[in-house]
Length: 513
Image (cartoon, rainbow, N blue to C red; front, top):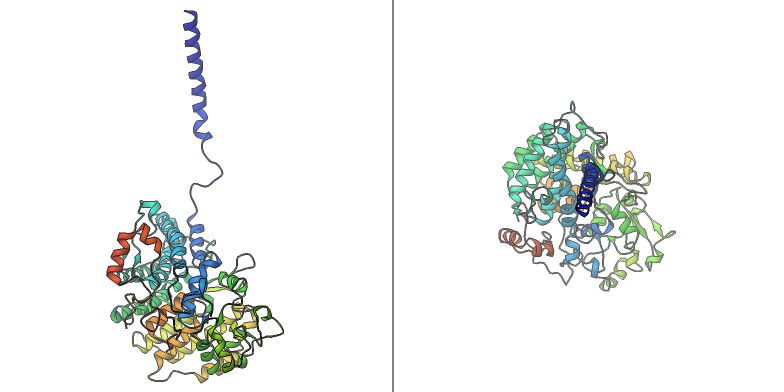
């Protein structure tokens, strides 16, 4: 009996012990250090900064494809740098935009939209995130065509691990709707956040960005659906476009938060990339003062080590772009023709000005907007003086040079001389406007390539590299990543069935011959 009493006493004591533990158990297991939710504004800021890429390797699609396809920056080297320079498929360089945007930008924006759509105190942030989502998906769909859109980024929120691919026509029509609605819904009388990394909570600037992006999206449809394009051009103009360079959508860099394209070209790729001859020739033949801001040449350099002062010059008269169609062996055949000592003697992007490591990057600019508006005027989709608007676009981009570095600034008299000598000519307006858009979008690879496909200008000649794998004159799209074959095969097959072969040749919906 004594043993039983002792046993029962032990159980009672143990019960009190557990009861005592339970009282503090919930508090004990709450993490009071790590956050369980994130401020949507901070997530939005991350989505904005990630849209200009998260590291230097994320820029390889721009460096190896976009810039080369539009013949602005080229490399004669193959292997890991092959792509648009040889018109061949290099899977490691066709995927960075997909990876960067789906793994970070899109996921972050879907989170922000979910956390703000029902919060009356965050209505402006909600609509800003809709605008930025439209910007992000324009880059994705312009690059790949049909892509996951309506179900994208919902793995965490809805458990969708295999999102369906939406047709580009559906994507663009929803982008137009979203930009129109979100821009109109922005309200300066409601809460804003000074933590906004893009405009510091300035709703007027966000509205101008939204409507300027709406103009850009509308103009994408100029070949495939001109009626819809014209209707949304009118809405964009009525809503209010960017009015000066002060409205530009821009990411500024510092010595700590650097421009990743510049970092890549300053470091391991410093001697590998060069300005392409068509781009340098266009600027040089038109006495364009921007050449002195954009280019430098290490005259007589026989190696990468010799690409240094005192060989360095920004003198426009001696700049020589690298001719298209050569590799690092066959390029030797051009040396005598152009009077260069080696491939290292050709002009490069100036890493002291437009691509120094703290140089800004632009998403949408007043210059681009004015040039698209001028085209819309020529097409009769809105009213106004196309020549005046065209010249305003050129002027804005020339003035924009000073934002890179004081050494890149262009004097007002040189700007006036250039625009005076370059008025629109009847019958050649579309070529002139879109050739200037090509220059005004320099370094903005996704946009430059998209507008080149849409407009057909400038009238570039096919890269003559003999090992080309493409059927036509230019690469039309980037293939989907191999990872999609493994993780999302059925939806990938449906996209290929709709759009065409998963290669460099298939055209996206708005890119009609």
